[in-house]
Image (cartoon, rainbow, N blue to C red; front, side, top):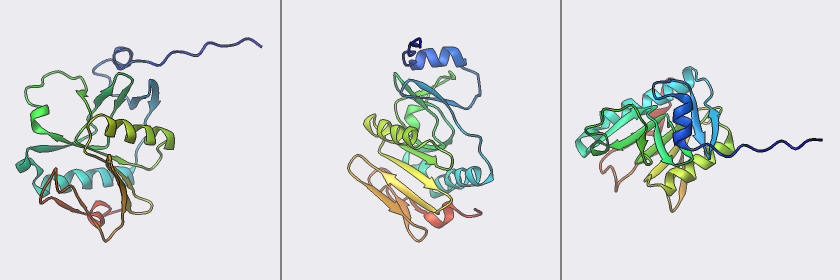
Length: 183
């Protein structure tokens, strides 16, 4: 049996070159491997839309942040992720006119976990946190709960709980029940 060479991992530059800056495909680069993001449906998109709306209505803009849906980030040289929702400092976006991913991790990355490959999701969580994210949240519509990861802990929030980031977003309180409204 002939041995087949294993291709070296792709870098973000190679990934962007192959994919093209304006290509709107559904791929991410996870530890040098191109992974196609699963197609989404109503439940996924409802939760993503709720999250974006709730953060905007809570007034994060008054604290110098914006909520973005499916904005791409160049987190490391082998990782380019597109979280479902990202909370980003406005200053990081000021003056940008190119179509390339934002460098570094978002301040808060939120993934709506429905069909995600567990090993890829775990890699994304740890990579976001190692590269500057304040927190990573995984929303699970089927169980109607959110898991929040920080550099020091993780916690699971149920339907009667609230999502808060007091040191980063003082006064911003998001109801877990509201995240899953309509699901």
